[in-house]
Length: 439
Image (cartoon, rainbow, N blue to C red; front, side, top):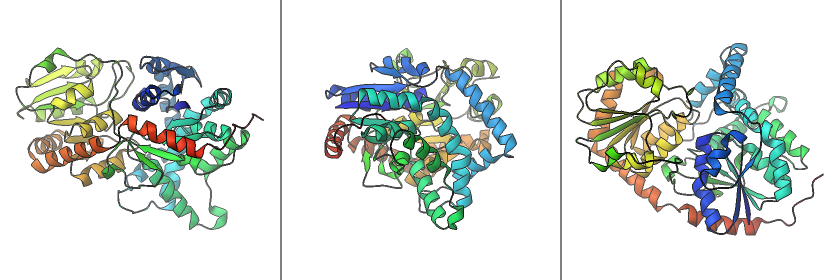
C-alpha cells in the first residue's frame, strides 16, 4: 500500500514519525513524507523519501514570526493566550472536565491559532499531492490536521500519531461536553468551522475524524493514556534523534550516579529560548554543587558562556544523544520535551520535568500519579526546590521502582514493526473503493 506521512512542521515531530515510517517501508510499502521545505533534510537524512508542501522558510524565521504574532494577539486580547494556557492546568488525569469558558479559551486562544499557522499554508499542496499519488493510508502527526483533510478528500484511511499524552482528545471531549450544555444559539465551534471550510472545498464533509483521526497511535504506556478509546493503537516509543555520535566519555562508567540536565535546545537553532533564564540555571548549579553525582549539563553555546561558575562534578556539553546517554543515568532533569520524556520512560529513569509546554499539565499529572517522577513549572523553580527534587529522585526507591515498572510496560507494547502489520489489516478492512476524482 501507499502511505503518506504528514508530520507537524517541526523537526522533533518529523523525528517522531521516523520509526513507524521505516517499519512500513521495510514491510514493503511505499512511504512518502510530506514536509515543509525547510524540513526536507530532516526527512532525507533519515533515509526516507520527502515531498515538499507548504512555505519555504527556516525554523528561525518561523519562530520569530510566531513570537511576534503571539505578542500582538496577547496585547489585543489582554493576555488571552496566557489565560488559555492557564486553563490547560485545570486538566487532570481523572474525569474532571474543563468548563465552557476554559474549553473555549484553550481552543480559541491556543489550539486554533497554532493550527491555522501550521496547516493553512500547506493544505492545498498536500491535497494536490494526495490526489496525484493516491495514498491508501495517511499518518498525520498530532496538530497536523491538513493530513486528515487530505485523507478525507481522497477517501484514504488515516490515523493521528501522538508524540505525547493525548491532551487533544481530552480537550475536544471537554469542549463538546460543555458545548452541549449551552443554549443552541451559543454553541459556537471555531475548530469545526475552520476544518469544515477546508473539507468542503475538496468535496468532503466535516466529521470528528478530522480532529481525532479514524485511529490514534499512542506511543506511551497506559498510565499516560487517561482517555482510552477502541480506536487507540498502542506502540512502543522508539527513540530517533537524528544523526548522532556517541561521545567518548560514555565508554567509562561514571564516578558517581549520573544525572542529565537538558532543556532541549538544539545547537542548530540559535534562537531557541530556554525555559529558564541562565541566572536561574546558575542558581540551580550552586544549590546542587554538593550533591554526590556526575552532572551532565547540555546547554547551547551562548547560555554556557553566560554561566558564572560550574561545579566540579559537572560535565558541560552542547548536546547529547539521549538514547545513548539516558541508559547510563540515575535521574534526568528536563523541560518536558517529547524525546527527553519518552527516552526517560523507555530507559526507566526517574525524571524531573520543568516546563510549561502545551501538553505539560496533563503529562505532569500522569507522571506524578504513576509515581515515576516529579514536575514543576518554571515559576516554581529555584535552587533549593530543584536540589530537593533531585535528591529525592536519586534516593527515593519507590520512584525508581515505578520508573522501572513503566519501562517494562513500554517494552511490552507492540513494536512499530508489529503495528505496521495491524495497520495493513485496518486499511484493508476500511478501503472504501476507488479514490474520488478531483472536482
